[in-house]
Image (cartoon, rainbow, N blue to C red; front, side):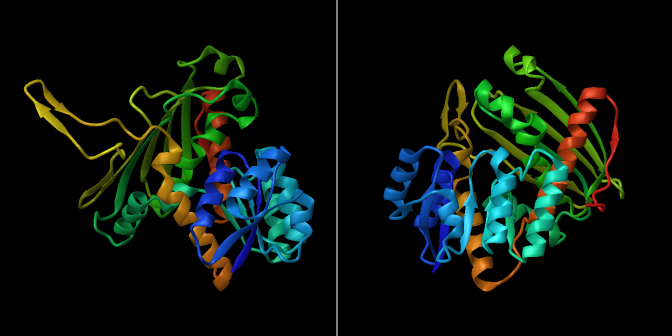
Length: 333
């Protein structure tokens, strides 16, 4: 039984707690949060102890930590956990600074502990099946990937202020998914962005609508479209065009029931947001982490995947700001 300390009792912390509570190979041993009442409430639900973060990291009976705290805290927590010999599961991004992320990776490597970065979409059953089918050659050589990712609404402005911007906060998932499906890394990138949904987002120097085009050394092309607004629900679609066939993963709807009448065909809306859409993915990624730590096998996605997605996000942000295409080298990380 793997004993896990949950750092952060907010929305994502509760998601991970639910995943762990459904497992027989791991358990939530302790919970910490800046808000003591929140930590206690989640600890009570999980049958765990409410402890301080320092106490959790220092406890020799706790084997691993799940870092679900604000991004600004990740750097220090990763260093502390690595020094204590804990396996680490960290929400993305590792840090808003690529240099600081490199320092985290170096510390983890020196300590010899595993660190998994939470790109949960790799574990979505549909996207995972698509990747396997691509790897098996069912569509032939990949030629073009189109990723559509649109949220039903923007987060609060206070969140926008500390998020690192759309490319680092939201599109970073799509950069990782592109790498996951391509089988090789992009070398060129061009981004455009606008503020179309909320002027307050623009006032913070961010965009809420963006498109990125990437190209690999072999010529494969990726198109990513992101928006902070979708009136029809949480929009998550991927299309991969290959030499022999095309693979497509459509939106997950609230139900599969379709009504046909004289006025036409009516389908239910898409899932409302990420908690519902990626419920299975959150469970699968935590199961993967626990299995890898227990068996001593490498975790994936790891810190290297995290920093590569971060470099692409940084390049997209720079391209959007100066209107120039960027060359990226993901071999030098």
